[in-house]
Image (tube, rainbow, N blue to C red; front, side):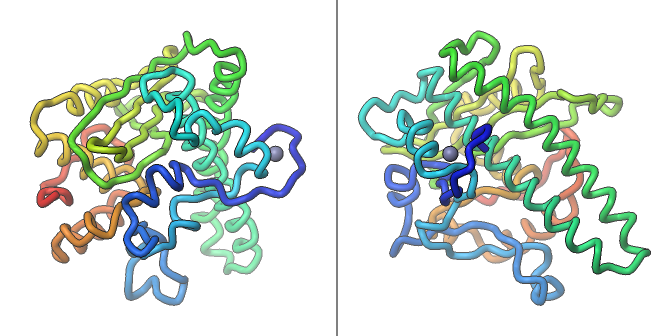
Length: 293
Ligand SMILES: [Zn+2]
């Protein structure tokens, strides 16, 4: 992910390994939704919840150890942590963004290989997914460069970041998000992209949201207002909708997972599978995964 770096990438944790992920782990494990092996897809659907060790959970291979340590040091050391600091807000958003780009790149590589082996009638659908991923990468790369410029010059005037302190919920999210806010929204690059980070720390959970000022997202602005609500139920329901309808890359503590009734886990899998290609702003569900949290 670092321009012109040729060193081998290590596993980077998208959120603090020791300060966030380990603190909510049990026997050093967390729960993350992951696709099952291709042999299990028929039985388990397109993904399942898995217990993952803290060394592997919520990681991606995007930076060599030197760049990973160097770039993210301000948000990795527990000393000068300040979630309202623009540099730190940008670094959280940047790492989540790089993770998503890398994950899409891997999907492109995988699809390219797969297409060579597949019957001709399946190629059209795969080609269309492939184009979707490439379009997504191109868009996210625009914001990657903009964030790099901001971080390098220590000038965040082209971005807006908000940090909201909410009741503690052992949920981890760090992703860029594209919401279709109107039916005729053009997807000319660059298009509206927001950055969402959610993680527990101490007695609270922090929600760090950001976007480029030239590409504001009305959905995100409403999301910020909802996060500022004084009602815990309302906040948790909104976060439940976020992970159910919009994300595939998130993690939670085993404790939080146990608080979700098995019937709700099933509902979640159904809703997720139905909506995986739907990015409309008006997606709502009756499900609240975190109602017992
Ligand atoms: Zn490097």
